[in-house]
Amino acid sequence: MLIGYARVSTQDQTLSLQLDALSKAGCEKIFTDQISGTKAERPGLAQALSHLRAGDTLVVWRLDRLGRSLRHLIDTVNELEQQGIGFKSLQENIDTTSPGGKLVFHIFGSLAEFEREVIKERTQAGLEAARARGKVGGRPKALSTNKAEMARRMYADKDNSVSEICKALGITRMTLWRYVREGEWEGRPRDA
Image (tube, rainbow, N blue to C red):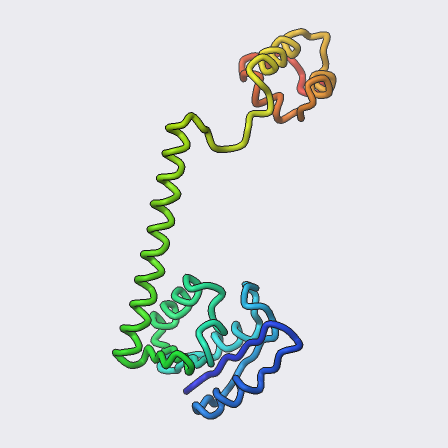
């Protein structure tokens, strides 16, 4: 059975072109969404996927109607393939139920994986270059070394309450607890 899926991004757009093409392709049932492709939750797509059984084929007018990204598209088609469900895109003329269609789709997948690896390599090279120049990534520390030591001394003085210390240094209780060593907490109530 051919199950169709059509999607437009806004209420101003019309599904007519896609619906006509899917009907002409022989889809017995067609599900639709009027929602941006970037949205993870698409009720029409969820319904279409729930109606598919082994031996069925999901048909879309164009690839971009199904996937939020190339990675999402590849993952979705791979999940369908694992369930014995085919995939067909009318405009790109891809049909994973044929050997040629599978080949084209696997080439897309390989290109996407290659792109991810190149991005990963560039990111790692950039981080290493930054470290070599003395740059350290991550969130800056809440307290300088001097202020951290001041926090410990203020905490050791039993006359200072935790609230007063936090207010004086402009930090939260959790930040204070991170800077004060575990051993120095003992014997002092947390709410003091």
